[in-house]
Image (cartoon, rainbow, N blue to C red; front, top):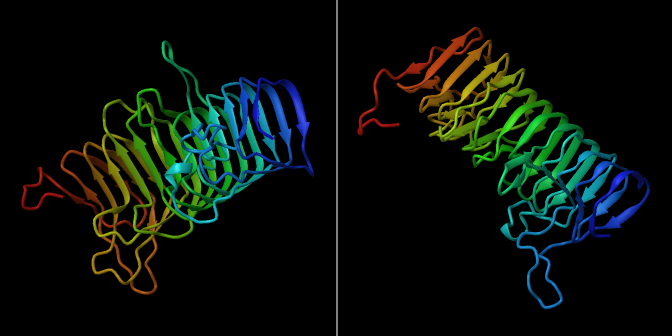
Length: 349
């Protein structure tokens, strides 16, 4: 099963059916389309070549590519790929499970994905060379499970009014959740993630325009790594559209000596509230700091708790650069280390 279609107003009940979709299913401008059930296997392991041997797709195909459209629903669907390892393969990085390009009022419910070369879910805008952004993905994702993605679990490059609930992600080579708004035409606004379980951090690459408001609530980070739990990198080229809030989350700090558990770089307004921090492992002489707020960042840490490691693991105080601001109140965080002037070359951070 493969190819393209312009479907309108139909429901396909694929319960109990199995399909091979090596070159993907492309839905162009679908309207009110529902796909229920079905098991879809993507056996593609290399870029697709045409009859003359030329590569027709440089980075693989998504199992379902939804180009624009409105009211598309996937319910109870299972997707499996052929990526049997756990690292990034650039030749097949486009091999996502779902690729939503400006699709409005989408619904993904009770879906299981495993062993894909690309992302679990990709959200990008529909663009027009003359008009710029035509539409952004919107809708709901509820009860989505992913095991082994060669790229990102949730790749949110652009979205507006998107609600994601009850998501379990593991073994994502590039990271479980990345807000990848890297250009003026990409931004995530009015996004809520509620009920998220990951084996790694959340990363924001916010070179786009007017990111936020974004709420990430009831997120459990199951284990730590060498990176920060939250990294916000903002070039400052465009103002944020609203607050980025982390609420009732569980963060496992890593073992990096030059990063903090929450690393904010650039003028991004971030609040972390009523959350629990678990410090680094005891093997560290200089464990990870609770937070680092630099380069004109604005942050609030409210009623957060740090839980001492019973094996003796420590943590460093939060760092606030001379050109950034932090409001820290409640909880049991120690007072932050605040720079009062730019660091010199000798002690530059």
